[in-house]
Length: 384
Image 1 (cartoon, helix red, strand yellow):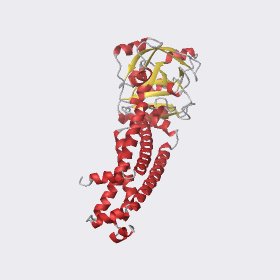
Image 2: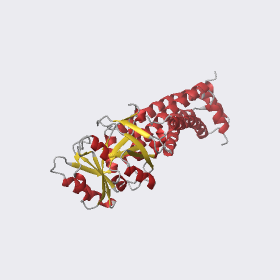
Image 3: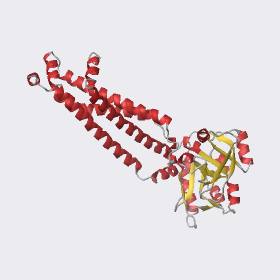
Image 4: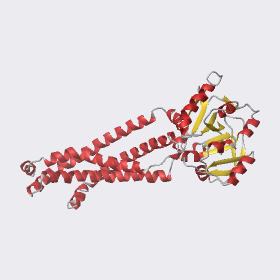
């Protein structure tokens, strides 16, 4: 702290260069904070909360292929299965065919869905109203807040994959421990089946187990049950099922990591060049400091502190700037539903600040070391 004033004064000596260096570090940390937040968001999708006792059954050939509804009765007979609910993705258009109006829509059995998702919190009155009224719907709390929906609102959806245009009345809003499920919308399966002529097809079956330890046995038993059928199945945990959607994006995590590494390396070179220019301009000043009794280690510490200070200012601007921007902008209108729960967690902010400090150390290390080694005679000779 004794030399803090000197460090601050020297850091701002060449204001233009310092500002440009701060901005370059800020841009790097902003990009890295954003990219890491994308990764943590994708990881949270792959690890849904409270899903240890739930499985998902789908066609082994493709998620787009369907299964007969007769599978439900057979799955219920498998030891370890407590409840089964058929669920079909609807994929209709709400208001306009734009990303900001996209949300997950499913038509399900109104009773069995609550037997499977026992973690959903909804009032008994809302639950009963949804189950008793064929035109009723429920949605998650986050989705209701996004569109400012209230109980009793009429929600009209235009079918895309199915020739059905349901007009639905919102009868319930639920909350749960898994934020990604609060973006979902559910309505009656029987109504869609009736309007489509009762095709009797199911996209997925959601299963609740008696215990998480039963998962391996149930997955093997269900798949073996339909192994030789015309519609073989693949049963997996809810987390694995969610992860399969993320895997469709390809190795996006690896790509983001490599881009981040390139950004850090490039910015470090820019900052190093800036610090090297600063060190070269101050050779005479450093020689005078040594002549006055400053030890080489102290000169090294002061110059490193200047570099780290500049980088940390850029890191604060970049990390908290990203937090501020995305708190207002958000990614609710993202084409990818996985990113609609995008948020910047405190650990990401901390890593951004640590990274900016490392950029300061790496970029200022060599110039500061060389400056500390300057001999007094060589430094003073440049006065002439």
